[in-house]
Figure 1 (cartoon, rainbow, N blue to C red):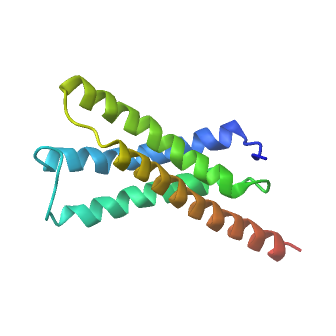
Figure 2: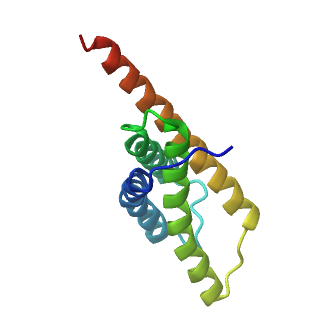
Length: 134
């Protein structure tokens, strides 16, 4: 069955993801023409920044969750992605631009996976602290 998630942790992690991921996304849009940045040196920098946002969102959501920390991390990163991407989808639909639904689905899975890694790290840190405590 699915683990029971604590809403506050997931929402907090999603908020961290959004706060950290929106600036590089906006920078990417401002630097690009027609929403592509092929060949730009900014692509790896912005990709790392956004990846770090998903990781930290997952870490924040999972840090105080001894029960299902990985699920909390994945849910927070995915929720943050879906909220931001939802705005992008609406923008594309209003302007009549094409959408790549496959890219959106792949990016959703990638964000959840990175959030899961944040959950793994948070769980490891929690276990380490509990072992170190006398």
